[in-house]
Length: 217
Image 1 (tube, one colour):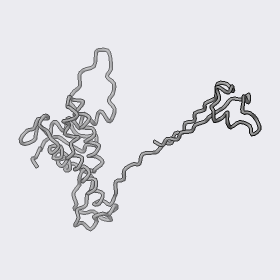
Image 2: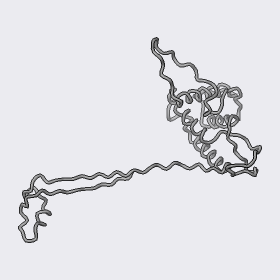
Image 3: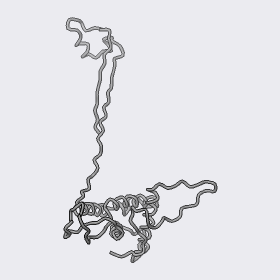
Image 4: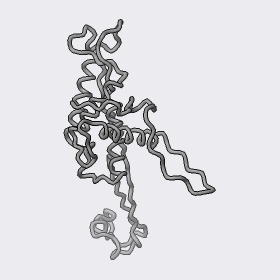
């Protein structure tokens, strides 16, 4: 892939690396609200990606950036990774706790890359990009992340399990009470099913119907 040395990138989740470009000054007499950790990291990631495009050979503009360029960026970040990923020929391949060091490369962990893409995808649209042309949401990027996840799971012996959504059960009970006990207001089935020896006319009590609905979400 084309190199982009000097892009100033670092571990996308380390909190280190280049800071975002300065924001607009706050109004006089008011102090700006501090950014959340997520927003601060998103700004750093966005700045790092723009620097990568600028230093790319040949230079790239954001409008010409595709999913393939995003994948190149993710591979470029591997040089700053801190996660040991064993190669297939390593005796510790698939070993979650190797007893000794090895010469296998350090790479960005799948979880770090997945979170990074989520932040850059949001930053792209916040900076005027259209959702339908968002390169960080390209199918090729999703496939690449899935391959990284599966490959690292085998190499490290640590499977990545998807969190199961909790299922909630909601039960709703509805009660309907007849307005009066007069024969004309009582359902025909109830009138016909009166006392065994009676005529079924007004019993002097209301009629209640209860309906229970159970919904699982």
